[in-house]
Image 1 (cartoon, rainbow, N blue to C red):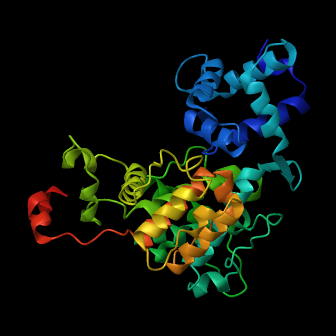
Image 2 (cartoon, rainbow, N blue to C red; image 1 turned 60 degrees about the vertical axis):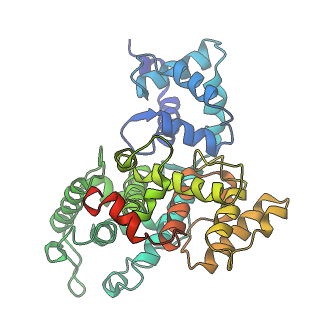
Length: 387
């Protein structure tokens, strides 16, 4: 007898919804990062040991991730076996954050925040595209009940254009099917667009596991898959210039005992974190950032960072404010002084949303890295061919 057969269909549907709310990239597994992100959003992440305890409890085959059957085993033990479980408390709290949208489809509240943020970001990046406005694809509505982002990706045109924002010239727009006059695209034309989008996304390193033309054309039924794809594109766009080729001055982030090869091996996310800590250190702060969730949600590190890279425009008065939300808003106000296009809210900062805080930090770097240009001697020392 399979484990699924021990549950009522209604219970299984609930378990699947909660499982999907953990599985941000839609690959039908929950990895350590996804578990940590959920714990952070629920304000239940207080130590690495707790994360390790949960993964140890659930990952019975020790492959580093939790699949559907392992998830069910723990849920079954919690509900019917009388087993004390660390994950049981997490499950119950996460279940309460799952909200219904439409008939029988779900997206959890954490994802709703991201959906609105990504919609605003795409609206900004493509605001000058008259064609998208003509087709009614922009601006994307930012009313959470409408799920505008999931609706507006349905013919592939919006995604194709945003892919070209993330990595210019990836898609030749002449290959896209577009509406002509009052004639809507046929199902065949839409599928052609979607296949072009999916293959192009693969070509620039985007993971498209379990994402096909059907899932995108029916985005409102699969919001977590749409969000997973869009987040990867947003992340790629914001991080693709955070490298030594684009910013050779990042060589100053080398730590004792490292050489250039060590720095070149770091992924953009780690380079960004090291850049953040470089400025914190130079500002005389004892704080260091090891993640884009709990370490930044009090806004103090952001305040120090902005004041350090632009002391003439960004003050550090937020450090004197006790209210966390007011501090976060002061950080956003300072960022605006640098013309940073931030699609994060004060609430997102305070909640420690790791995706939106990573995106915000990257936006600050892209607008104002706060690093002096390389001197000729420095460039000669590292050698242009080494970058």
